[in-house]
Length: 360
Ligand SMILES: *Cc1c(COP(=O)(O)O)cnc(C)c1O
Image (cartoon, rainbow, N blue to C red; front, side):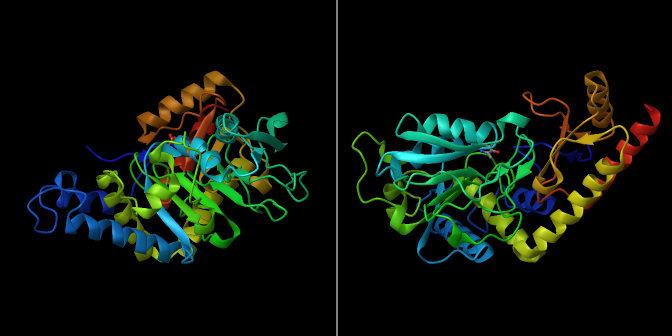
């Protein structure tokens, strides 16, 4: 059975090379006589895997030494709680609401501190990023929170908000390692890896050391205390070993591809093919304002629900999978993460052209 072009928003496509390598090492990882799934997380072999993974992501993102890199569990959603639990000082935080994930993060944070929703694009179904150049942020806010790439709505911050000196916390689940990042602009960068980096089950959190409190409220679970995880170098308990191993392979793949600069060029090239087509199509329309478009998630519609469904079904039959839009938005969405080859996007656009002719 041939592989399809998989446009899933997450879990999502991984580099074929990585999957093949993992398959080759499945029964006997480098002469250990066992799979990475079967070995102790305290073994030398696994220590080397996690150490190299950390070193490689540090290199790729140019992460300064005063930032910790943690490999955690619980999905991005668990950090929605861990963030306020660990960053709470004055008991107040500013959230910018650009879609479902920011909304959920704000709702979760509200259990632990006062949330001020300082901007939102809800008025136009999150089809744009609000102006964040002069937000009304209280001086004593503990942090400013954004979801940097909105997986469901297909928007991305191309300029970070002016936080007025406050710590910026960003959920980068769906744009992790898609382009170069200036880590120093953030206090916390985190994301679930299942969109652009690896298999579900791993969350990577990059946290400036001074933001990791020595003490948190006694009610904060040990596992959600960043200091526990940081002091134990992500090995406080059994980490998601196999997932970390695959992430490590993806890091090496990105390095081989030329790093994040090359990734960005590759992603821009792919996205341009699709957006250029959407801009001239008479049938399909992109749903996001051009200046805030994501390179990773591209939602589009025909304006006719039946036709949308027909498109998704026929695309699937043609080997273009998982193009159905999020249940809250409808229409279609093509997620074209790092590992989606340019041929996949070309095949999608050719199919859309054909579909447009047939359904004119
Ligand atoms: C998928 C996604 C999440 C949720 O991730 P889980 O790992 O399922 O908790 C959060 N934020 C963004 C931006 C996402 O794309």
